[in-house]
Structures are given as C-alpha cells and as structure tokens.
Length: 379
Ligand code: SF4
Image (cartoon, rainbow, N blue to C red; front, side, top):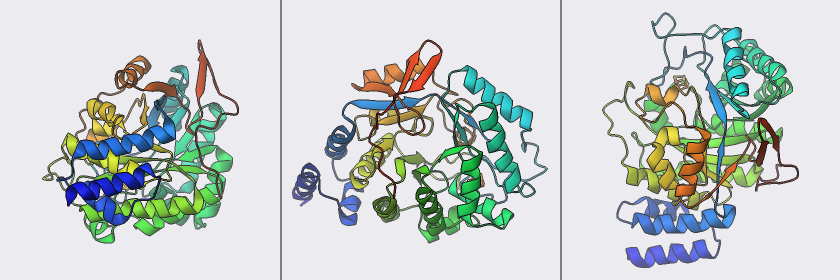
C-alpha cells in the first residue's frame, strides 16, 4: 500500500500535478521513506531553480525585546522592568545599520517586540531613518503580527499602515508570526497574538499593494501532521490568489527558556522531511529556505538536497532563535556559506531581498538588471 501510494505521488510530481492535503499527510508519515520523499522534492527544486542555491548578506536588528504578547513559544520577549529587557536608541539602530553597510550587506532584517508604550510612529520612524541614512540597504521588516499591532495603535487600517511604511522605505516583509494557523494550537502557544486568518489577511493586503513577503511555519512543538498540512494548504491558497510570497521557511522550534520547555526538539530526519514536504506541497512557491540559524548548519546544508534552494544569509546579530537554545554560530562568513553550497553540489548565487542576483566588483555591488529569478507576478 505504502509503496503504491508513493508511486502514485511520484507520478503526480513528475507530471507537475498538484498534491492533495491527503498526499501531504501521507508524506509526513515517518513510515514513508524519507529519502524517497527527498528525491521527489529535489526534482521539484531542480525544475524551479536548477542547481542554484541562494544566499544573501544581511544583518538582523531587533529594536526591542519588550512585548505585550508574551507567547508561550517565545524565549526572546520580556516584560518592561525585566533585567533582560532593552530598547535600542535611534543611534544604536543606525550604528547597527552602518555596520551592515560597511560589511557589504544588501539587507536589514528587522523584527521586534510589541512594546506597550511604543506606537506606530516609533516603528515608522525607525524604518524612515534607516532608509534615509542607508538607502541601498533593503529593509525587510515587521511581521504581520507587528503590522496588525501598528494598525491598532495608529487607529488606521492595515492598508494605510503598510502604505506609510512603504513610503518610508519598507522593501519587503519577513514571514514570521505565522507559527501554526490552527486556532487550538495558537490558543496554547501564542493565545494573545493575531489569529491565523489575520496573519493571512495582512499578507494579502501587502501583496495587493505590491509588497513581496515571505511565509513561515513554526514546527516541532505541539502541532500534529494535520495542522502542518492545513497550514501549508492555506499558504498555497493565498499564493494562488496573489502570487506575492517569495519563499517559505519552516522554522524549527527550540524549546529552551520557553513556557513549553519540556517539548523534545525535532530530529534532523524530521527537519529534512519538513523541508521536503513543504517543497512538494507549495508548488506555487519559487523558493524554499533552509534557515541555517534555526536548522543548524549541517542540516540546512543537507536540506539543499531535500528540496531547499536557499540558506538565508550571513545573519549577524540574530537573537530570537539563539535565546531559545539554537546552537548555530553567531554568523557565517560569505566564503563559508558559498563553500557549504558547493559541497552540497549546488551553485552559489548571491541574491538580494527580492531574489535578484547580486553582482560584486570589489567593494561595489549591484543587482543584475533585467534578470527575474523566478519571482511571480503580483495581482
Ligand atoms: Fe512577542 Fe513575537 Fe515573542 Fe510572541 S513570539 S512574545 S509576538 S516577540
């Protein structure tokens, strides 16, 4: 039964047909040969991206870790007054951006806590100041959770908040805050923040405005296989509608210092299966990211043969996954990233936030004109 079922799915994949939710559930089963699933995912990955594997040069900035939501899954956030709590000054944020610019980065990745006494203008001001001071750094910032909070504090619709941010220099949005869309799981791991439908609605609005975004899933905590499949199908449905997602990243849950610290972290085999099934189910996503900070360097590199085509970036100053016990290094140098990709049998391609190829000549860099690395046309 299992063998004939995988053969049926293989025939669909080879013919470029869409897999059903039931197919996804089957492929997640630990009884199905991981390497057979990985082989199928690699077929799709090569069809979409050949042997290219993408990376970028980026630094992270998290302006504050004070957050009103205090999700059970989070090891990073604090209440005001906690000895670990911090709020970066404008000078500190700009100094971080200068460091990124001096290091040749093309991207700043900004996500933050929802501070109880900082309104939309504070986050908008950070976006504007960064863009004014470093116009060549692409600002990929603010999760859908934060955008919804900005709208609430500003008393404005999400659409106008996004427009103001785009006018201030926002270039794209990260995929964080999606966790698992299922409401019962959210009620246990992040009961106070936006529900799954709101997360999707914010991204829909962003796509309608021409803003590209990423998508994510946090896995390996209390969710079931059915919850994962439901999450992927809901992302796929929105991508059918808008085409605005650039990539999907499956984020591995790290339990240390969270309210659910007794959860056993996923094994590497489960991580690889997650990448592969994502690649197979999300047939309308161009890119599947193996985020080395979350997966660990070795698993992320291996994932390049299991459906992933992107390792993310050099990632200096990541705090969120490391606060929860991720053992990955503090950053990776460009040569290390490139050699990981070559060792995996792929061709390293530096990209910018929008998956355009970056060309370098000494300290100068530019985005290759006219080349579209597979991004989809927006609605
Ligand atoms: Fe706040 Fe995000 Fe942490 Fe939840 S996961 S507490 S929204 S920083």
